[in-house]
Image 1: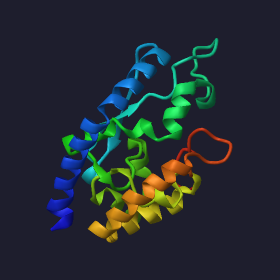
Image 2: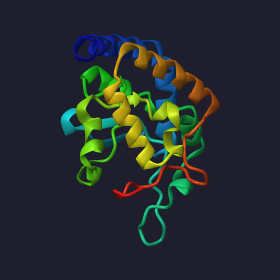
Image 3: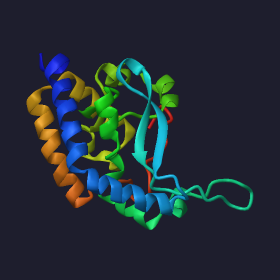
Image 4: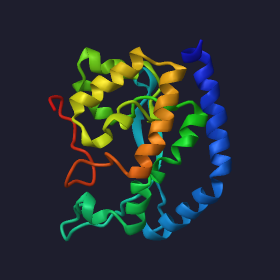
Length: 201
């Protein structure tokens, strides 16, 4: 009952209220990133969701599009803007995903939606992470986030699928605030973003 009906209802109501309450902050961040990123405050990217159906995820754009003399994008660290660094550190870059939750692409809590090119690299157990809607935060995020290995992330994602419940979601929800406040696990040591998954790490 909770997994199939109540969870989706809670997601919709919470996302609607969240966008309403946080709209002033949403507008301020949008304006700041508009000027920092040459008129591009949002980042859109294809991600696989429930049953591996592709959707467009919406995030605040924390990196600009500056390139080197050969036309190649600079490194993530070089393109991360000051306001983008703050937005990422406080996890505000995830805020626009409340729109994805309203649309039904995502849930507030679930395995993080990854890149489509990873789909062919999953083993059968790892693929089970797509048996539920992806989330803005999830069991792996409150147990290490980007500071743990891909193998561990997938183990935690599958554990969540097998143990999805209202109590589990409550635990993830409140632990997320603690992690964001402490800025824990945002990236692996010495990096701005996590490593690329190649099917073996």
